Image (cartoon, rainbow, N blue to C red; front, top):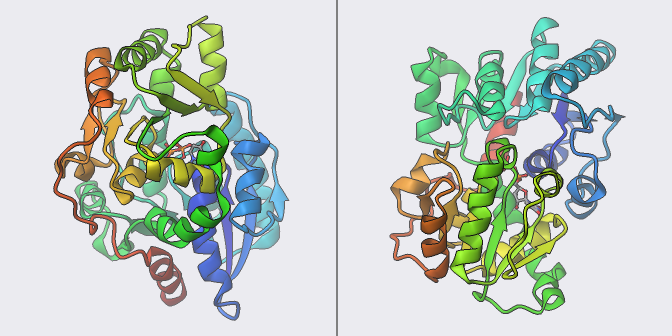
Length: 356
Ligand code: UDP
């Protein structure tokens, strides 16, 4: 069976890495061809993940990035269509909720090639988020929808998607967290490099358009960070870096800005943080996997089960709430490790594709 996998952004490299390793462990059954759209192109947003996670080299690199949503999606559809016509795969596999996901889905559905969507059914119910539009549209083109949670499966059923198409397999990011945890311990020296000790800092990431493209929200987050008076380590996403500069915002002294990290260094910083402050979807879940309280810098989240179990506090960009929650070293929570499956989502995905 030939599968074309389409990826283009940081979280997709991490998700695809574990699934691709599973595919390559069954070579007689699955032949995978990778398309990298080029949506993320900086070395520390792309190449580092291919190197350290041993991801198959892409057979096609479309080098499409840096434009508007419409420009990128349109150009990707055109180029992906050409590859699909040439390769004639049995499946197109897409991940998550980026423009690369949607472009892959549209190109495939118009050619009547079956689509499998990993991380299906997530909903923030905020249609102003580009990711929400990408998720909804992709789910409604897909033949096989791999959901991580009960709530995601229920969301799809509520939208009329047939139960037959929904496979609740758990979360591939949990697979990745288990698979790479030991490797991170062995290979990352980031705590030493930054001269920090375990539980002595807050780890922050900010990159959602609703925060970066709104100077009031971005300033309010910075004010909250400043008022917390805690030591904050912030691997800065290129978009956020540009916006901070465009808005001439001043970075408080308690923040150490660093370049975006490879996955293994990021995992180490997450595990040893006292609190994680983020607007990332993946980082919210990783905080939970590592038992670290998470302060989510958004007004809503797709990962509602994290809020329900008390591991995640949704604070939006309220600077007082941010400051308070970052200065508290830990939150008493009832920890259960079963929200995202059993760490074998990638095997379940491979089996479902083979047996379809
Ligand atoms: N990540 C990373 N280096 C960083 C920041 C994040 O490796 O400097 C990883 C993080 O551990 C998680 C993924 O990137 O696995 C999340 O990606 P991102 O926050 O860009 O996207 P989202 O999950 O919000 O779609």
